[in-house]
View 1: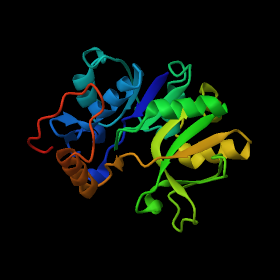
View 2 (view 1 turned 30 degrees about the vertical axis):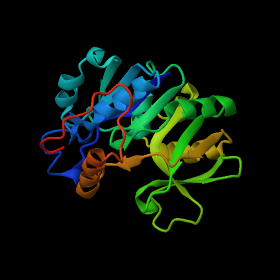
View 3 (view 1 turned 120 degrees about the vertical axis):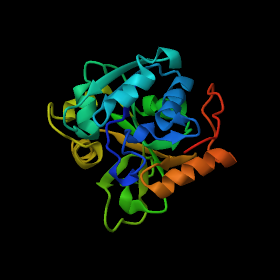
Length: 250
């Protein structure tokens, strides 16, 4: 399998930490958050990884290069204007020619990607989403499922969430044909545009709840929580990652 890690966002809500770097490059411990996601993918056998870039891309390119020193092969896709979560994937259609993960680059996690991929293959779904229960559903994409896990409805950041919904964790698996539902050359979002379209067209989209560690680093408070969780062991490092030195901003 391959993966796309969404890395283009400006991180305006996380300022001042993102004034000189893109959000996935904010340090947790002695290394950028994006490094943990690359390590997680490698731990689960994914070594072909694409990163979409826009805001201060040189910080990512300089740190990761072609990925060889991290045990992976990295392909970068620079966007002169932001294409959204789905538009970024569509631009990489040539690269994403087999089942692939999409991970949001501002999510700190150690979830079992292998298990999600196995469930995805078992159902033959077009897409499979990892779901969790945050404190506030209004800042998330929210899925409503049937008893067998098939997603019946998806709402992006609902102002008044309906009971029974679970939040998208920013971790998904797709078949390449999902790209057929994304227009080329313009911005498109998975939660706003693609998921509702897939559901309406009758394509199988499944959601799987998890209680594993998931934290989106979308605000200074959650960034502080991530650093604390690394210190106290609440967040466990992905396999084959040297423990970071807890210094400075981390």
